[in-house]
Structure formats: structure tokens, C-alpha cells
Image (tube, rainbow, N blue to C red):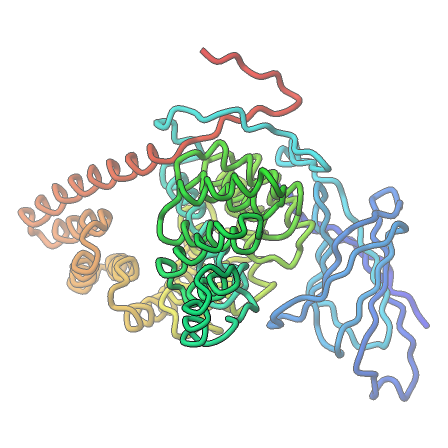
Length: 551
């Protein structure tokens, strides 16, 4: 038996909230036989400690082989110990996470012995992002009202703000793990349900007993599960009149109203149900309806109540996205942080946490969280799309993004955005390192992107930039014109086309493109401003701060 000396890794030179600090020690039982024959399963045990050597309880510990769909999770006991089982000898990523603490991550952990001990050290988060993010039983904030809709909020340059807003919308649109159903409420409600017979059988039963609750209910349910909500509603209404206290029928009636856009009727139905039965799922539905009816302040309170009553993954996701959508960046970060600690296997909660950190200007930390989300389910495109948007507008190359984009392009060679975002990541790193050799692979990736999707205007634009930088203005002009053809409102393409014409001596065409560029910029800015005014911004009061009197 021998012991490897503890080693400490610290990524210095950058201000980081989620840095990697860990102490790892291995005990290997060795024998001549075991060197060539290892058992199929490997046990990883260890202890999570703070820097003083004290055990840290309730830490989420995970191990994952790159390319696996899902990591293996456990939590530390009260004495800080944990135990995991890896399916076979291989190289793994071991990670320890706890709200308010920096992550401890050990990459390329080679497991070959039958039993390995790994001790991890967690440090408390020390930079400004940890202030106000300690989250126990009660949040550290109150949503006190809504601000003037003309206040955009957010952080940083206009490009960064636009990216933040786009990420918030992408977060809201993330699907649940329920096939291709995009409606989270309906997906949760119909999962596993089957009708009580064929349509003909159920219609015959209703004709025999038109005043029977079950006859109306079962035929209504058949149409509901088939997505035929207008046909389901009269039957649910009839069943409701017969038995108004039947929860399942009332709930399906509310969702059917919502599905056809009758939000006021749906809300009234849910409010009636809440008067008799106080359930978390009803608060969640009510929050959804309030948001659709423009009452975002009540919506966020209903989402919070749902998460308080039932802290499941969906309720935390809904609460966090509502805060993020209405530019309550710090509270959204707090909620997603807590949600991630409770549900460490949730890709969309980690993506939401990344989006909220990005909106707060913590670009590296944001990328770290979304990279972790991509590791949970490497085949899921959503986290990579988040990373691509972040990388485009971040002031400097983001850690881990280039590696993840390479994997995205490898796993999804048919996805044009995978090749485009990989190219953009390489370009950003090349500019940082002033490496001209990167131009050839970048051009190849961009060509691949436009071959897959000829309508991808941004890829045509970037090809034009590559050609311009090597003074090939004929190809550059062709690429810029193609970008404008497929995306007429791409203002940068007009500007760069004008510059290319200017370099080739065609001043008249250059001036025309510069004028078009200004017009498109004004139109785009006006559209963004209208969109921002449509989104109410929450007024947040932190608990440790006194509320500011309103004028």
C-alpha cells in the first residue's frame, strides 16, 4: 500500500467565484494479479472538508465519465463522508457542490483500483456574488413591485444586455424531460394517462347517461389527452356541474381553458379550487396564468409559494425563470443556486443559473455553470446554444467554451450552429493569442455551417470577415451579400459590405450600404426598445436593506 501526497490545484490569475480547490489522495491495494485484472465496479469513498479540516455535510457529490448521459450523484453525510460506485475502470470527472461554496472539481480522475479514496476541500465563496445568495429556508429578497417599463435593467454594454435578454427567453423556453411536449403543465398532467375507452365507446356511454359524471368526464378526458380542448371543455363543464368538488376534472378543465387562450376563465377556475384545496401545483398554474394575463407581480408570488410548498425541480425552475425574465438578476441567481443544490442533475436549472450570472456580469462563472450543464447530458443542444451566445458578446474568451463547442460539433455534425459557434470560439481565442494559423479551420467550420443551413446569415457574415482579413474582397463582398440576402436586418453585414466596396474603390455602393446600415440600426434599436417596454421589471428589496420610500 502507498499514499500519494495531497496536491492542491488553484486556478490563479483570474478573479473567480467558482474556482477549483481540492486535495486528492488515493489508497491503492496492489498485487501482481490485480495489476492486470480489476473488478468491473469501483468504489470511490472520501470526505468533503472545509479549509480548517472540518467535515461539510449535505454536499452534492457526482462522478461522470465524459459522454455519459447522466452523472451518478450522492450527498455527504453529517460527518462529511460519501461513497459512490463507478461502473468500470476509466477516466472520470468528480465534482462537489454546495450552495454558497466554491465547487471542487477533479477532472481526468483515472480509476483503476477496486477502491479509491478522494478527499475534497470546499471553500466558502468570497467574491461579491456570494453576498445575498446564501439561501436557507427563506429568500433574502422581497419582490416589492414593478418598475417603470422604460428601465431596461441588466448589466454591461448594450450587446451584453441584448444577449442577457435573449438568454432569459431561451431559459423560459427550455423543455422539460417529457418528450417533445413543449407545454410544461400539460406535459406533467398527461404523463402516463390513458383514456378509459375508444371515442365511440365513450360517446355511446354518454348518450345512454347524459347526466352521468363519469360519462361526461371520461369522454372529456379522451379529447383532452388527444389535444382536442374545445371538444373537451363542454364535457368537463357538464361534469363540473354534477360534481364540482372533483379535483381531477376541475384541474383538467382549467388547463383546457388555458390551452385555448381563455386565461381569465382558467384563472377563475383555479382560484375556486384553491379555496377548497391548497396545493403547490395550483399555485404553479395560477402563476402561469397571472403571467399570461399581465399580472407578473402576482405570478412571481404564486411561483414562490409553489416552490415553498413543493421544492421540486419544475417549481424552482418556474420561479427562477420568472425572476430572470423580469430582470431580477440577483434573486434569480439565488433561486437557481438553491434549485441546483436541491436538483444537481437538472440541466435547465444550471442553464438558468448561467443565464442569471451572465446577466449580472459574471461571465466566467456563467460559462462554468453552463459547461457543467452540458456535461450532465452531452447530447442536449440547449446548453451549447447558451454558451455560443455568451461567447459571442463576452469581453474575453470564456473558460471551457472552446472544448464544449468542439464536443457539440462532434456529437451533432448535422447542426449548423454547432459548427458556427465552434468557429466563433476558435476565432475569439485566436484573437486573444494572436494566432493567425486558426483562420483555416475557422473557414472550414463556417463553410460547413452554411452548407448545412444556407439561411444562417451570421455564418455568411463571419466568412466575409475571414476573407476581408486576408484582403480577398471579391469573396468577402459575395459573402456579405449572401448574409444580407438571407438576413436583411443584419446591420453589421451592411456596414462591412460598405467597407469592402470602399476598399475596392466603389464609393457610391459603399455610401449606399453605410446609409442602409444606419437605417437598420435605428429600426433594430426601436424594436428592442419596444420589446423591453413590454417586460415589467421587478423592484427588489433585500432583507438586510431598508426599503426605499416610493415617490
